[in-house]
Length: 274
Image 1 (cartoon, one colour):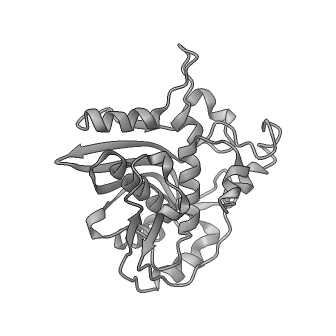
Image 2 (cartoon, one colour):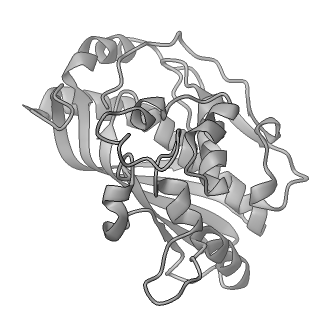
Image 3 (spheres, helix red, strand yellow):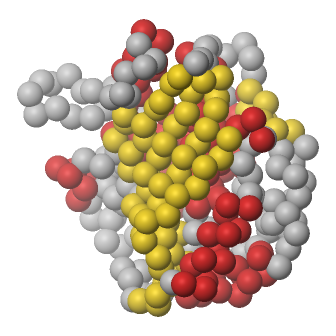
């Protein structure tokens, strides 16, 4: 994960401090990229503990197409609680735990203005990867301008694009807003896991995750944590195990996904800006 540690250093050394929506303030740079080849191992931060159980839970929740935070909580994950309970959102929620038209809803049930039938972008992408993996239009978007005010949080990781060549599958993701200390290691793991799961579903080899970062920032109240993390020596990254019996991406459960030989430094706690 040298790419990630190098990014932290670049923001600290070259970024500009500025106010932001959260009121905390951040140091930011714009337009960065990282590449992770799955043959090198599963890209998991080792200079602090990654909450991989939360990564799995959130991704499975996205794939289910749910907007209900209570369904995510059943998987033992509470990372969306702050958004669900935020003062700016609660008057819009349709029920307790409702997060609105967030990621999974857009992935699985995009509303078309031309038909009453929702568009299942995920199923369409998997179908196309099986039939025509060289298609240049295998893209899933969560950025729906007509529904941004119907979301507890407009999507940060807003678009991903599949690329297949020589029986290998790669995934590129664009992220508009990047909480580099807390969020980005989670995002790297989540989309690398998604790449593996889709690749197994369509019978291709998972190859490369390409991460494009727009507003790439470290919150001002995370500086000491970042310095602590940068002082640590990384361990070798782990391997990912997926249950080989699973051939439908919607059949994966928590127990079908495991990290093998994950060695890490202790967790570093920091407040999340909401």
